[in-house]
Image 1 (tube, rainbow, N blue to C red):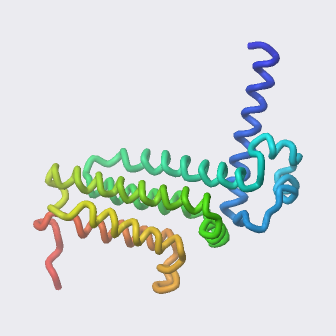
Image 2: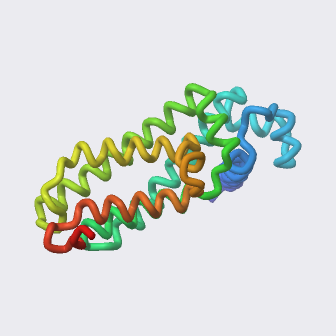
Image 3: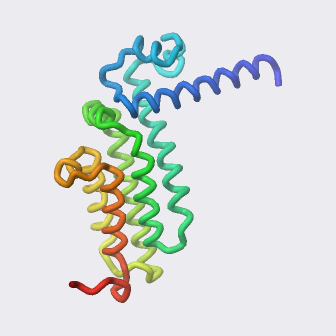
Length: 203
């Protein structure tokens, strides 16, 4: 490897490290109140270094939010791929989503909601999650491990609850934090899709 290649590799590694540090900072504190000067100071780097990542604060925010959701998606899919049973896959998927979102603060979600490009990334990921749940339900129905339910409805219902969790509505009504709400959602979906012979009798 030439010295030029070595410098290029080190530069790319530093950019990746900075993006990861930005993800952690933004998840913990949001991004609306930060200027580029603030971010540079918090990350102990120059503004020119940040401009090497993106041409503006807005573009930097988009890159950071996109990176967070991309990493989360990979981790969630890895967890969901382990169980063989489709209902266990549903549970693993939803619980993994909760785990990945656990570090995200109310300030982060509020800033995402207020910034259209970031909001679109979040909404697109929520739609993808709903579609993934729908596919798992469809596959489970075909395999006979999930009772014949309307897969599109289950996906839409899960998406609606996920959105309500992220907006803080579930916490406001129930007092459950996000992780607990996702556990309840996972239990509800798993129980609701069980073959009739596996379901507990009504009491």
